Image (tube, rainbow, N blue to C red; front, side, top):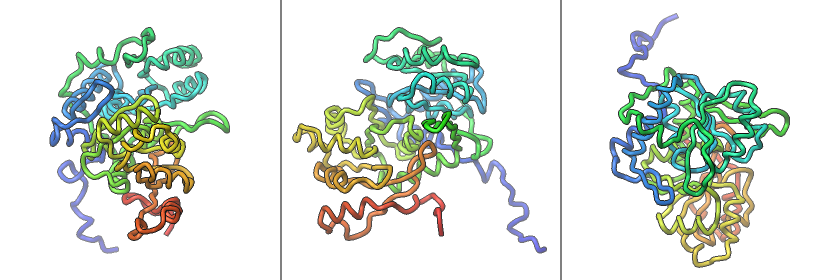
Length: 373
């Protein structure tokens, strides 16, 4: 058998190969766009430089605590800045982020903490009582609990340390680690457990990286989108959008709870350009009573996921100025992997016909291998 000259002396070395990691998106945006806004939450606002430093500080804290490559760090958080940051700080040291579904009961949470072997758990005060109950049900070691305080809640601390306190001694120049292999685990998610115990699903750096970039293309995000977090970040790691927005140097507009009035306020206040959600979210916006506020949504591009959305939802969203694109994926993996690619001429169709076309199942994302030839 003849060996091709291109198979000789062309091995992977540091000069020509680095494992893919979505953390590199954060590093790039912090370097190229240090003063652009990265995260907005209520009265708080961060730049990409500040977000990068905050993530490195918490990664440094985890490292000092003894968290190592392959360890699990769980987060029980709504869509707040610490949730965005966790998607970078945790993999910075090779640990695995386990984003817990905030709608679960204590028994399901306890099972996941035990099964996933969480060594650290970040907790929002809204779920303090629930986590106390879950911790009492653990059969394994109790994780270090980090309180992520919020002015909206006066719940007493249940943790061993406060998140902002943990950042203070952390190193803002911490030397974060690339994965040894892009096949290394980056995240752990769980199915709902409706047919037994929840099933753990592991995703890797390569998939997170490629999915994040694919979303920019399939969702028409471009550069510097202003993204409103109506989709829970615990769901498929927010469809990889924390990493997507870092790659696009966009703005994360955080939202604790899906409330139509607040959504329209944020769209108007921050010039939101993109959002994501299930049909029920868009139905809430379509049926919101305040027509004046609904006009604020004009120009927003939305991704809608799940089974083919009802034509009425697509038409209704269009009537308030939200242009929807149907995407589809596998729950608890990376989020959407296919998109209904809009074709030239659809804009000229009658609204009902256009909605019918846009409700069809899609084609693979740009960086996905087709499921069939």
